Image (cartoon, rainbow, N blue to C red; front, side, top):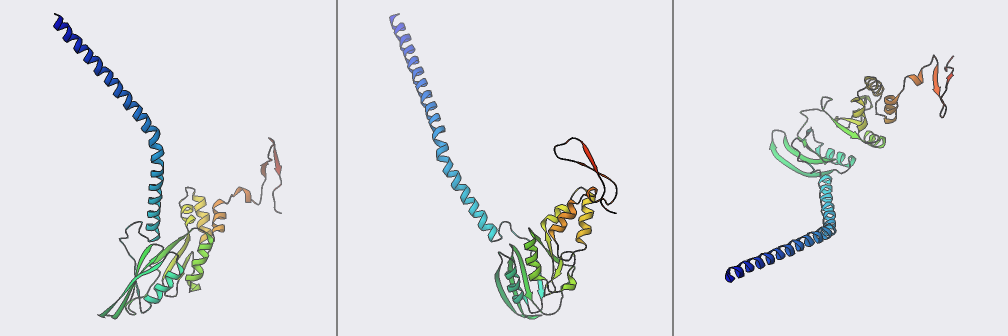
Length: 251
């Protein structure tokens, strides 16, 4: 019997030791987790900052090189003999532009042919000098979305070579290629849900040659009630609850 009691006591002491050890390990894990939670953010913060800076710099480089997305469609422009001159001309006007490469082909049906690949604002173009077989016309044009009036003025001044071809933001350069120099804000104006605003903006830009952003904004925000020549208008003075009736302007 005393042997059985001794064995039972041994098992109890072993169980209590295991329990104490388990509690101790659990306490260590909690302390370790708490310590990690307090230390990890301090370590992770500079790592996150560094990763963010690296990603930002890579994206910036890709954007500058026009590689933010792979271009599957490239405009191909046919010139008589002016492809090289046109490549220099266009890259001098558009920022972040460059001549990527050039090549010469011999013994073609057009004789000796020069091919230039240029990048204008990240958009790739191919220019070829292959003889006077084709001419540019208004069926094809390139739209330049401008952020402000100075940008519109810059492109208009440097690209337009035929005053008779200037209409509604369209122009022709010295090679006969058509461009549309448009303010980016015009797109949102023409997509407005108010048909009256769209009609006013359309009427305004149809009278223009080079787009004027201030005039377009004025047409978009125009209030018919404030410009009525006849009748009476009720105007509420600031800080007062009563209405005063003012006489209408005009004869």
